[in-house]
Image (cartoon, rainbow, N blue to C red; front, side, top):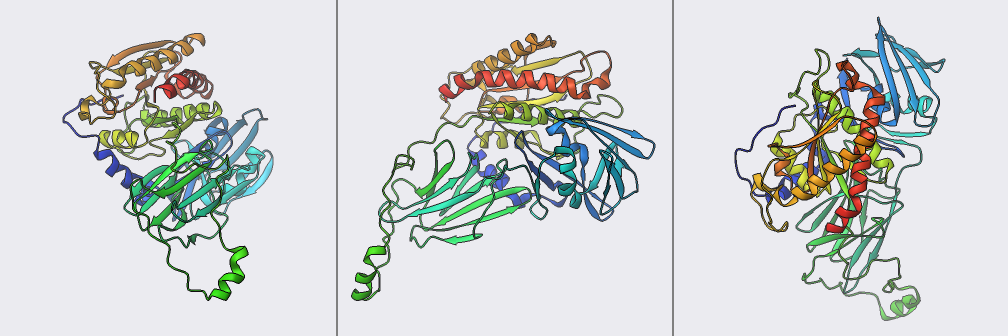
Length: 491
């Protein structure tokens, strides 16, 4: 676990510009490609491995958020035991350099040879959709080109509704709640669904026929879905109906463009009068005009420290901190989502992200809580850190010095730490809470903590025990969920 001290001032206003760049699904490089997996219990990303001219995916990486996974090497064989939540144990066996294996005593055929690397087993990406039902017992929908995998009936579709006239709107009604990142540009709004299983059942490009909100397009690529709404005027997005409805409309104070005059002959106009479009009356389930302020969204950002070129601490000769951090963060995400708390991973693969970019990306997500996830080989249980700095009575809507962004939120950060400490103590998990001069935590404009996982006992390798990590992750999730009403009330 390595922390760096602040070296400069930086206005939080730059977060908006960086967020636009970060939101673009085309910003990925080939080496950063990942598969996004959607299930009832968790949404997560899995890093992909280029190997032998093909793309491979780790079997354990896909299964770990869905249940308990125990895997080991046995010579050239790779053996896996998977127990889904509330399900029965499934055993699987593959062999390095062979394109056949067994799952629950059933023979399976791969499109290319199985591969082992650093104790983990990899199969061709092409096979993951057909293989996963053997483990989960659920139907899967694997969309290989956009790198999206849906487990069970989790997909969220949407329909559009266009209102013209003096108060034009594009209303997108979704079949489930969504939490996209929103980026606005002149004449354009981008809704980027990094965590939501949004799919499109209609045309990829739609023209509305409105002079102000001209149309929208749907794309999914790189494990991300995106709706881009175009207009002739500046646009805003508002959420309603429990985040099941997003209303796009001209920004306040914008002059609305008049509809072009109709060129039909009088007789044609008279003939079509009964079916001519009329303003749609606003019912109780439709958003009001002008739109009310969106409901506060409670999103937890989990930041698995290190990654890529930053290995972090050496837990053992074979266990790098960066890998423990990501696995533990995924378990916390899973536990939070089972408690109805939206949680997103800032780092979902083995990418190198510098400390300033982490803070910028976290602030752009407007989290209710930010959690930096670390690991160490000394001590036992969990350590919880809050920023070591002087509290400041600065209004949170003003610009803040970069290295003082955390100051107005210190009290809430301490309350989050206390809530998690209480849950850990209830489970008899050793816990220590203390302040420390940490980055990027002190640059976060939201309640923020850092947690450091240590082994459960004197055997350091037990830090990777699924049972242990799940127990600690559940305590962390309970502590965060207990703070939700208080933090929502303060937002």
